[in-house]
Image (cartoon, rainbow, N blue to C red; front, top):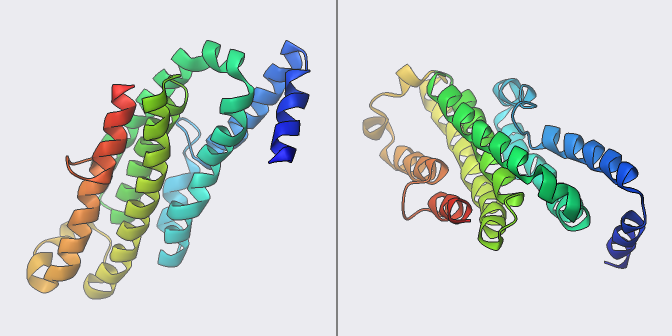
Length: 212
């Protein structure tokens, strides 16, 4: 904790130009890790080519390192720059939400659908962190947790579904409730959370961000 405090003190003594350079470097690094639109191109292919355990780890932990870094370093230590950049970053986040949703609907590979929905969720998180509102910030944190759980669970379920169907194509997933009703039901519950159906954790986090 003292080390983080010392970092904040050191940053506060820098000139505006040096602060801006550090802010840009940190933001790009964390934005790629999340990833934030338009720095997202690596994620769908990574999920598509990864093993199921790899996708679970990527969704639940690796993608959260980006927003955690922003919350830990950018949000508390660069108030002036954040206020100036807030409208632009909120807008970029909103574009990411829409883009991720549209791209997900256009896919027929179940892993790529989940990957593009993750880009949409990262857009929500980005907007919430830089709106400069407590509700939105809390929504972003809650969204990190909710997305980590729901997306990891979806990839986990996808692994079991693949072992039954031997395909990741959505057209081959018809009639799953007759083949494996419990697994299909579990997958549906987590999918509802991922898309933010009222009553799920995904809805609560997105509502807090929109409320902010």
